[in-house]
Image (cartoon, rainbow, N blue to C red; front, side, top):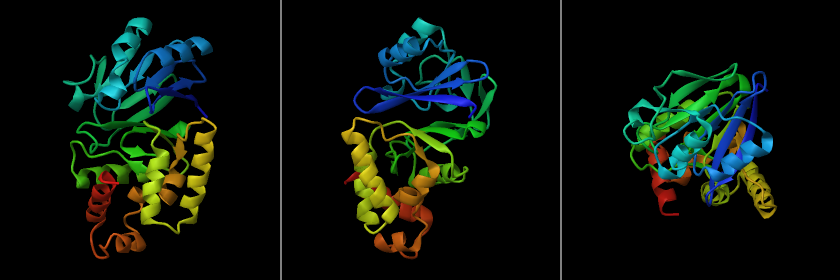
Length: 255
C-alpha cells in the first residue's frame, strides 16, 4: 500500500489517523481531537507532521489543531463550506478537489448530513477513506444539520467505493452501533460474527476501527436500507430508500 496508517485513540472515544507516504515520508493527520497523543505518536516514530486534514467543525475533531500547528508548523486543510467555524485553514476544499500526501493523491468528497460541509478524504491507490462521523463502524453519525435525504445521498457515495476500501471513522461506537443493528437484522450471521469479534477486541483493549467497506455493506443497517427484508422490518415495505433511512435514523436516535 502507498500509505502507512496509524490509528490514535484520543479523548474518551475519538480517533485521529496518521497517514504517511512510504515513498517520500510526508505525513498527514486526519482530525485533531487533542494534540498530546498525536505529538507522542509522532515523537515515538520520529515522523514530522506536514499536513492536517479536518473532516468537520465539531470540537472533538478540531480542538487540538492550534496546539498541533504551533508544535509542528503543519498546513491545515478543511472544507470551504465550514471555513467560518474551523481553525484557520491553509487551504479550503470543495468536493472533487485533490489533496496529496507525498506521491499519494486523495480526493475530497462532500458527505454533508452529520453537518453541512462535512467532507471525507478518499485515497484510491491506498484503498482508504476517512469518513469521520458520516459513515461510522456499524452505523452513521447523527443528523445535527443535514436532512435524511442528504445523509443517504452521502452514504450512497461512500458505499459505491471499491468494497476493499478501508473505512477510517471517528469514534469507538462500534459495539453500541452493532447492538442497534441486531434489532434490525437479528438473524444476520455476518452481523452476529462481527458483534463477537468487536466484543473480543474491546475486551483486549483494541480499537474496532478502521473497518472494511465490505464489512459495512454486510452488517451496517444504514447501508442496507434498500433490502426488502429491512424495509419490512421497519414496517415500510414500499417506501423509498431515503424514507427507510430516515425512519432507521430516527429509531437509532432513541435507542
